[in-house]
Length: 289
Image (cartoon, rainbow, N blue to C red):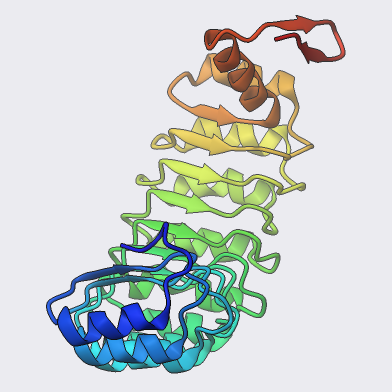
């Protein structure tokens, strides 16, 4: 609703709370001037809210405002709290206790940690979860999410260096509907890639970019054994060679492989189609126009 109106003030939220009692969706992404006071007013007056996006609303949005939403808006189905450093486990726990219909939860780069992630197991209808870059979360809690949330379809655990092979193998094993898994810059090795195909018939999109322990061997094993796979993100997996990826592209044409080199080539080809001209040699490409 207000995602391009970054200077929206609490006065607007007060008006919504007073006048828009049937409001279902509130998108405040990047509205850095709103505070808990405005959110509390919305919580009191808009109790039929089903979706709220507070991502990047600055440090003025804290547990006080989010808890007020949780306590007054039990019909919430989607909540996005990315980049809110002052929103902690307290908010996550109350949301999980009071909003059982939640299907989409985004907590990336927030103040949520171990206790909050553990509380997510209460959300039986959860379909999409983003818990990327949450220092302090425990692999054991992440590993069991798909056991308690059987409808989970997409999970992002990127930028959590403690997330390892064993954790993600459990996620995939019990995630019968899990088709997208993002684990960029996690502690992933060839062991995970070799074993994952035995545990899933659903996984279509896997992003393991910046996982430096992954090699050609693991990528080959994954490509051969994971029949459902359609996309594999390998950007800055520096131990995976361009030669191996070229061979795999020919052998498994149904899989889209994404590497730094391949994505750069796509950008250059797109630029050519749009009329740009380049001078190339073996070492670099220069834009002429």
